[in-house]
Picture 1 (cartoon, rainbow, N blue to C red):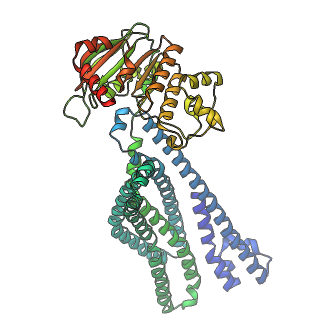
Picture 2: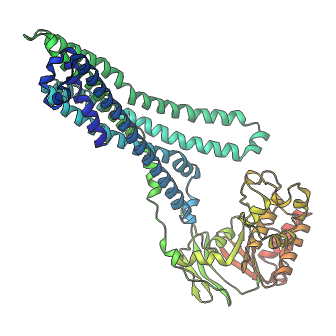
Picture 3: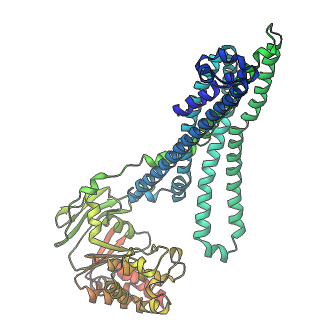
Length: 565
């Protein structure tokens, strides 16, 4: 930046000698620093060479400024890459409980859109710094040539831009807030519109979502346009006022006893200096306006950078499950609820057992599974794995001991095989076995590309039951000691569900299975059934024991049987 400013000063400083010598070659004697270069030159050659030197300085100055601009741009956008990656990493490493209460559209907007604003702001700040340095150098050079004109121009331009900045600041901030908030809404509308496209088509809601999109897009772009205008418009005002200033000085000098021609080199230098100074000041102002106009988006992005990662998780010891898993008086309350979701839940699990968790909708079954998997931490109680207290810092290794299949399967927009393995490196023998266990042979064989068939975004090209079978296959492919099924067979018919369960038990009889069941017939042979109601364990035992008790489980079973008739 300093080198670029020095080159600008050198080219500007040569304006007065250049104009003076062109008007009167004999004035060369007044400029001692170049006089020796032209001792044996006639007037025509002096004019030619002084022009070549001046043009060379201008070209060098321009080249240096291009290089500086390239370096600052590359640096700013590299910073953007680092910021975006760090934001994404910090977000992914946040506790699961944080994600429950966070709107994903705001996070996506901050990482994908607003981090670009951060890159632009870095570039703008560096440009502003460069412009300020350039302004100082040019002002110094102009002061050396003509103190009066330098002081007059500096005061005039400085005060003008201070007044403009004061007037526009509140509008820039207001537009920044509108642009940031409407951008979040746009991302949310896009997610809802594309994510629920089937319902939107069936209920003919396309125009409704188009109107919602327009209602957010219009004010966002209007606010952005206003800020662009506020950042760029002062240039045109100042160009007019600059010409008026030079004309006024010319008029003032014309009444001087030396005459206007005596001041023509000075006025020429002032005009060229204005050509350099005004863009420098305008660039600095535009950078400031860009910073203020993007401050709300920058604040949103910086919030993600303030997220903390629990570094202690990386130091967890290897956790073995050889004897038992004991849940002792587990209690939990969601942040936005008054009553506990779980209250003093206690039971034990032993290697190879098949455990079913049953209860009405909203009874706390999924929350219990989330606590078991270390996704959320209970307010009280603890989990002991082979007498080892499962604390937060051990969660990372604990998750390596089990596989989880949720009701809503997350699928990548890639092939069936990669969705099962979560990797482009596939163990074919292992994959073939898993496909057979999960009854996916029919799906694979019916497709032209077989296991490499694409499933589409969120698995849109396959059925709900096929998604669930892929999810179960993914869990089995991991070969974990514990398999957790969170209503993972709700989209399967009874026959397919029973067949898959039999295949799983046959392939690995010692695997521990924990299952949230929606069909009670599928858990008749389980070792223990735990019935949860209003967050409490009200019954536990085998299927036959609970049916004999004729209480909660018995009543739920009768309702299921009536509904299935």
